[in-house]
Length: 471
Ligand code: FAD
Ligand code: NAI
Image (cartoon, rainbow, N blue to C red; front, side, top):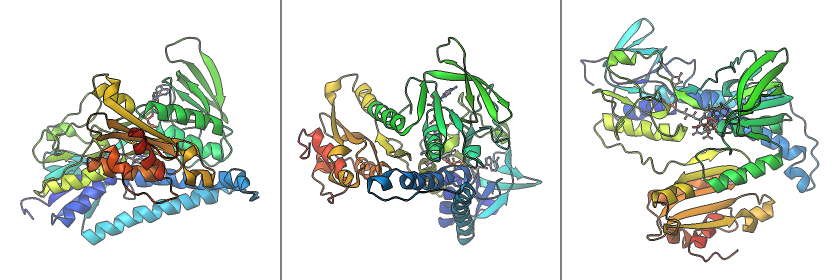
């Protein structure tokens, strides 16, 4: 350890980016501290994001299957009911197990948790409460929070107009939940409450849900979720919301303007995106500034413009995903320790944990064609429907497809997109194949166990060659 400083490495924020960076830094022999203001470690993801949302997605799916979904298909009559407070309790147990696990890992690896809000005093000094600490290297991993929508004021305690945090702990099933934003949070949490009995209307600014994803996947998702009972108001924006007792009166208009309509809801979820957390950090004292999107710019090694200060996760440009933050956490710690830490940002999988799941990695078909200068003949597509996959057929869950996008000349896989019940798990294989620079032929000639959903990936790769067997 460098005795000129209190710590070799100090990390601000203990989310998936910060806590992973702290553990790896300590593993590499650096005297490490992590500043976190929450009562528990794990950041947005473990406390109010990935984990509680997946717990409720799981519970609500079990209920829906039992209540008349798949159970009925198989002649199983379950007559399900649920106790919302018990469901919420089990969700909290899952969160508690995991956040407690990070605290255990901090102790095991001798990472010092400095509890409180951190702010810069100078480029090597951070204030936490009344104390100041110096460090040779400082990593900013402060994450993100909900983007506010003017005219629609979030009040999680009031429980009527909520953000994702409030929507993860409603004390009753909404009669009519209006979700503002048809992105990932809107679809995941909209699905949770629809399954538990709410009428759900999604108001989305753009003409289609899930911006940024492969066009065909977006269309298929739209169709499937509509069939499940989600109501769409695409190409619309909410201009105001007023709570009146147990109701919320919303004003809505077409995205490009036009007559104002009104919509009544019992609950409103604001999920129009997230923005980086930098307020209160006193970045100026360290000589740092944010870009016009409020993000901290970094280079390929996660260095900011100021010597000794690094940044990772949701606070820097790129997708706001936990696994991206974690990989950056490992890489930044390795760079600080003098090793070579690299993240391949071209191969970051993206998953929506609805039923069916939606997943993608690499370029969408549209991006691949654009990258080829608009020449469609330079991109080959192979698609395989789950309807033709034997395991999906046996399980009676044939919604969706798998699509492989490859370079027409080299056959190298440029992207993989899919929508099916196991897409979130299946996409790992695609990410690994792409990381190894696989061609579609490599995947087509890899033996896949039968009968599995994963065979649909192999067949989609065979379809790139024009030779699928089961279609
Ligand atoms: P965060 O997890 O936001 O952690 C930052 C931490 O820093 C926070 O704990 C905060 O309290 C602390 N902090 C901030 N400022 C200070 C300060 N000045 N001093 C001290 N501490 C500070 N991603 C996925 O990949 N998969 C999912 O399934 C998924 N589901 C999600 C569901 C929801 C409802 C939400 C909201 C997000 C979800 N995400 C998911 C996104 C994921 O949570 C984030 O990408 C991830 O948490 C980012 O990690 P991070 O370490 O950059 O920041
Ligand atoms: P998002 O960016 O996924 O979706 C926001 C949606 O709101 C977009 O479709 C956008 O067009 C729309 N929108 C924006 N302004 C609007 C307005 N005024 N009126 C109506 N619609 C409007 O953001 P979301 O869902 O809030 O999630 C934030 C981030 O959290 C995600 O981008 C993702 O990075 C992360 N996340 C990841 C999950 C996962 O990996 N499974 C789950 C949940 C969140």
